[in-house]
Image 1 (cartoon, rainbow, N blue to C red):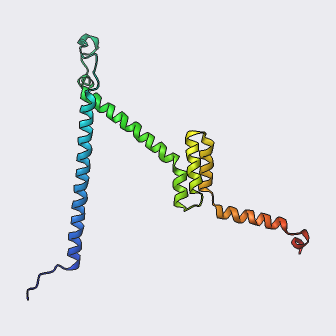
Image 2: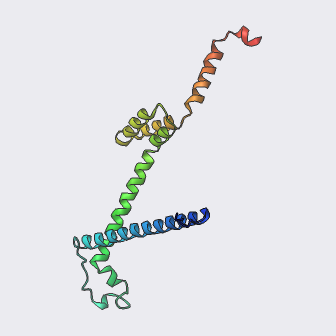
Image 3: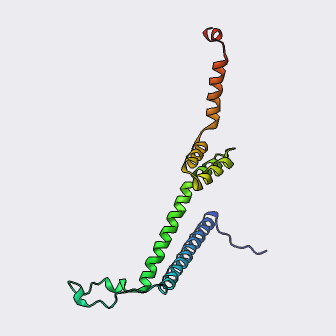
Length: 168
């Protein structure tokens, strides 16, 4: 009967934790490497689409000789990088605007509201027709309909009672 040496439970937990940390670091390294490769390749690809004019400016054109940044600005690859970053920022801003636009739908879904479909429809109407529909969708999504229903019921109930019963 052979007995395998077993580690005490805390050491096994420490090994599992170190494996998780190593896996997390490795996954971050892979993600950052992929992002860097995409950035560099997009910059080089986009650099072929443009031409930097004015590379042959004489040194007398500048008051103190050639500026140090001129070599960077004359590079098509750098201009491709600037183009890529500009397009990425524009796409990110559009994404954030869409998230802001969809805040009513997300809130209605989070509250498991029965009004999720109408909020979605009003959000789309707000996107394509008029922003008033979007404001209405926000109001519907964030309103506490249970509290409103109780208060309206109380108002109706109080209005239906005769004055004689109220005085008693």
